[in-house]
Image (cartoon, rainbow, N blue to C red; front, side):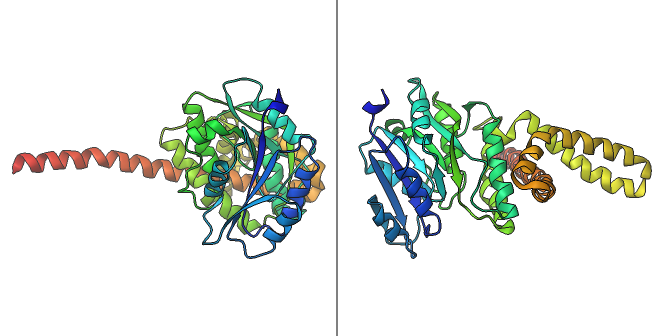
Length: 345
């Protein structure tokens, strides 16, 4: 059945010269060869185009200011007649079976609109922040429900007809953000299924720095994702917003509160250590992954970064929720005032 479908790989790229070779070589070594590979060159000024030309891929170039990957993927989808679209980021190197695994998942039922995979547990960068970020992503995608309520475009596939019918990605996301999550919400609200396919793995070649990681986590992920959740468009119960993760976040904040309070009330130390044990126990599987992939250094550093992640991700959500609630509560008052003014006149 799969061989009857035409499949196109879509790669949005902006100054991707340091990783594009790995990306294209992974596609070239795939057992399921795509019928077409389209690269959207989003105003690159490095050797992105030269690398793409060596692999003979179709190139669509934006000669102006970068439009972002959301717009790039939309444009590529409109310039192919393929039945299936496989989105691969320019810093992602797929395993040889992974494209085929996504295709199989996508075609396994008529109501499945999209499927996405996972980073593997061997990222290219060995920097602490990069190891932690990539393994965190790997862990969540390997341990979440296969029936997903979001989509991931780093390595995800979708039926082109449905993609075009749903108007593609929201191009108001001019930088990499949650355009894929927002699109996944629209798919689910339309009654389509999205499958998480953890066996479809790919290596992430991005070399995260610590400040870059925090900036991305907060401003390009947590902030817009929180806004999407409080808008009421999604229940948010998926991946790293699962009920278990919410309990872990509460415990992370208790650690801070009890740790500070025990300075003034040493009797609270027992409660602090009890929460440490529970928090660590709930994160034990992730800690084991860190230790296996990076030894004691990654275990210690990753555990600290993970605690900080729980702190700032929750803080951003609380801020967005309170801001949204305040704005909502103010709207009826404004309406009442306007009615009063009309009656008075």
